[in-house]
Image (cartoon, rainbow, N blue to C red; front, side, top):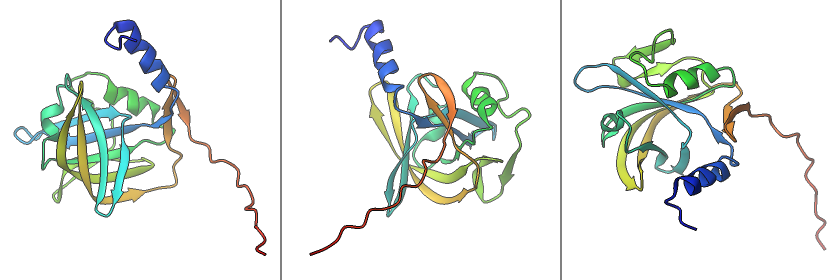
Length: 176
């Protein structure tokens, strides 16, 4: 199959959409202007507990790619199920993505923190790895917070909420 055709890429995207992902908003500040930067990302994944590392990817065409070079501080917000509008706001190109968004800036970290998320990870970029039409951002987790909110998911082109599976009693095996 020729994966370079537009139809093949649409078909691959559709197949990949069968795998549900979490929805994140990643924020930082422009190093020169101190302007706030944010984008919606669903390619977030854990990598390592020791050292604490995560990864996410950004398109080579993104106007924001330069903000996440090695050493850049950024916050990864795992959105809650009631933050669909926030996901759409940060996915849409506009002048001020932070308009109407409750967030905090602190003196000890160079990225805005959005309120009401299921989890938040304050990170610093360790490495940027070229990978096809994207760059993989490998980031060290400096600190994190988590809350009781239900995470927002994305699958097959639509938002969904994570629903915990019912607990299944463990089966005990007899030893002889």
